[in-house]
Length: 242
Image 1 (tube, one colour):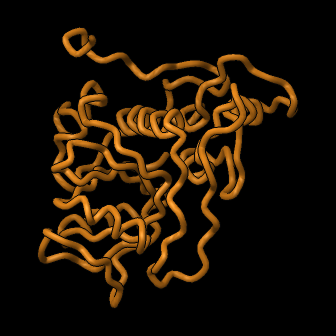
Image 2: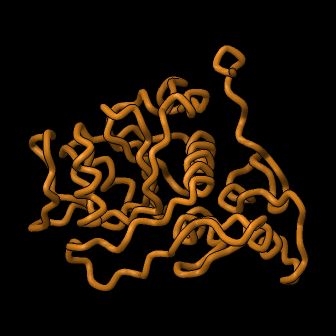
């Protein structure tokens, strides 16, 4: 089961620097929390934001603890630890208001966006927010960010996938996200959610499962539904609905 964290920065320019360098800088206290999470067997997935924009900016996976001697040009935030390597799954802005109904039980039930920098997000809220953000990016036809133009020194990195939308009627999820969320797809492979669900159920390729849920939720979290089952993100409270 992945662990989720909410990471923020004070400047939108830092998002561009993060994509270009493939890293994320944060205060020593936040870095220590991330290092502790990285020592476990679970993937550490992060929701990213330049808080003044009022948006979630995307999602990614931390690929290393802070790297001594490495640098990401960071503005506004001071007294930073060395950057962690970060693999962006997608870069797409989604307003905080669209996820106001997703509450973090590890932060007294507050909306995820109200958490402090480095706040851990409970698995159910993390799954719901991941589905919302990835779905918005896919619907917008967002492509995964390009390989970092000046990557941190980590050795070879896998090629990033292309656009996250396929032919009409086929939803293509980001394969790096799929791999981190449950092993349904390997890096470099594009997978139809129905096909991923079928494989999770042991069904032969070529059989279609109408209404198959996004595999990043299927069978990963108890109570979230099994592969091939539809479990939509809970609707926002009535007072937030149009």
